[in-house]
Image (cartoon, rainbow, N blue to C red; front, top):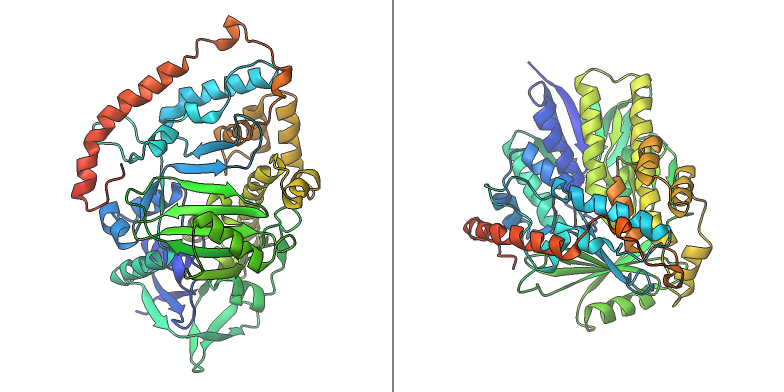
Length: 504
């Protein structure tokens, strides 16, 4: 009996991720085939993740001690944002992945943010309130031993090329079919559905459903189905990047570092085999040559180190599911890699599609619900990322001054967030009411607004009362983290046993 066929067009991390998730969900009743061309390279930008990638591997029963060494991966406890603010005491902050373990500490941060916004001179920098910050700065693994009563949330850094190769290997082992050929044409049925994709040899590949993972080319969703693209260029100005690689750290830290430079920001991502650097900038303010020179100086790379220049189309499709085609990954949209959200949005899109597909909810009404929810996810992430630029206090270039003083139009939701913050209102309540706490929780909003020092000037602050302090003892928090870490150390031997490099 021939199975119905679902064809994934395009490989890379997004394509093979989609193929694996679909194979697990519907592979018993469908044939999953991925068509890609080895003539096409991958973008390879965005080699960090959120904890969503951890869930992906767990759902597919793929152990860390197998995939991490194969992909030169390291752990990621969060992101340090350096030099985005010039405010004394707030020139750097760490955005951790929130864990249940930090619940009480995060509540204390929220409490102090209220006091600070009301003019009380209390500590409201987020770093002291986070266990993941403690782990990152002490170069400790975020993996907790089995006897711990809690888990610490974490993501990963990885080699994007190696990850795509690894996922391909697993997908083929699990029954996904593969064709190495270049798709050059698409055939539509009279109903407007995609009937087949046609390769460079003229061979037709027919299917009932198609997943567009063709990257920025958007061969199916864009070129064929003519789905309009909504640009975010009015609020997110960075449209270019230059990257390079340096030798690996002897002891790689479990954090990404995002450093504000003259006309954008630079990432530092530590892998087992190398340290990846990239400078994300706006071509309106900076030339390719100027960006390359600035990145080389930042990374300490001389002229012998190769660089790669990239252009980015920032925004999303107006619809991600059209007819019998679903766009996944760069074909559906891209938001600059500041918060490493690309793979999380990819996973979320696939998961939503699988849920509807398995339930038979594939009609126009359900496609509209799907498209609305995916668009909201993209727009919410866009809003959060734009906060980094809107709250900067740098004065060293026109880029940063304009980012703060001449921003594009803010969404109604983001405007409400800023009004609530400056009015010292109930931010968690507002985020829940506006339903924008899905992509980023209220803790993340507090981490960024507190970390950037969005508070009254220090000259206006008054001393807090004993009641204001509410019994918060920062030395007690630090001691608690240290005691937890003593128990945490015992798990290092398990990491060494698994073949992963000791992160100390």
